[in-house]
Length: 195
Image (cartoon, rainbow, N blue to C red; front, top):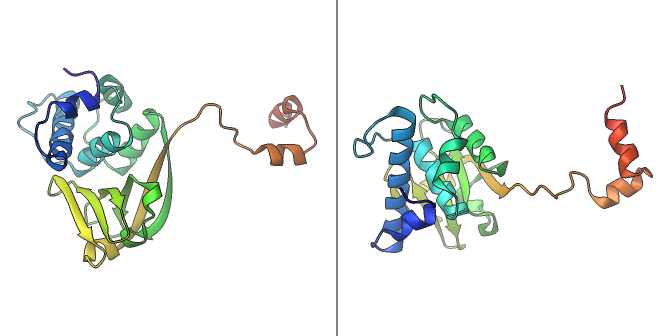
């Protein structure tokens, strides 16, 4: 077994688009084996699982496979939106979300998980947006797709989830706000525990 997602992707000799999709497929097969004890070749389609793998590959190809497997809940019956978001937190990424359409997506926030408001439509990963086109990983087609801004799929309302790596040194309150309280950090800490 390869040690990182990037090294797994390097094994693929296809075009970059095909290699991305093939790596997602392989990762998803490993998850199936881990979660369900199935042969990775006997892969069932799981849109959330494929989105999880695509998001990890897009966010941090240096992620270790063991960390990815440990991020999942034990005895899972498959992935859903909550399981995916929890697994991303366990991988060290926190999420913020906003209601929007993919057409209005700001490329600086890529990659992002987009969940359409209509529950019968599958989620997808927005890989890139350049003002003319949007590149997505489509779990239904299991490949990267480039859609124009006039495509109906990018005009639908939904929720976009943006992931950032958790920074242990990040202050939850800015220095400016702490300064306004006229308290030392120690006093502010004690204040959190007083009744």
